[in-house]
Image (cartoon, rainbow, N blue to C red; front, side, top):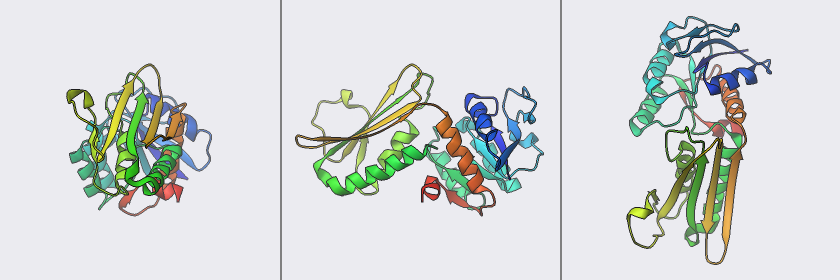
Length: 250
């Protein structure tokens, strides 16, 4: 039985995770952390991670990058594994995560959806086959409350394709500020924000007289919660190191 602490327990994703866990018999929630400490009758909710005294195996975090230092410190102190599902980390924070993984087991990915991670693999395969003959553009769409742009998932997809491109690529976010032709060594990344769009990602391979499109559409937040819970169960008992969705897909 995997014992889980939810960071952001009373937020939207925290409640979805609770719903997912309630249907499973291989894990349970033993505590939550949230600025809103309203208890739900199932487990205690604390205002900071350092107040948690319950024995646990994994922390799932769907909150805000500002809490990263506290989570890394608590994980190092207790040995509890981390599943980091928050987006919007800057480069310095990513370096902190990588450094912390030398002492703590950390599962980190930009997107908890199995489908998105399959899309990433398919995109890499497409680049290997198409080479330099096709221009690559990414369009991502999210709800109007999302703060970061482009999405971490869009950057994850771009990074994955850059691993196999024949030549180094640069990311182009802002073509309206210049008047010049598109270069071959760029990936355009475009963000759309509106309504209640959960998350849509489209990769466009545009060649001479033909277009190939790979896409993924999330219809609810539950797919991310399911992925996070699967990751938590997987991380139970793992040694220090960095883990991601490749381990769950392979």
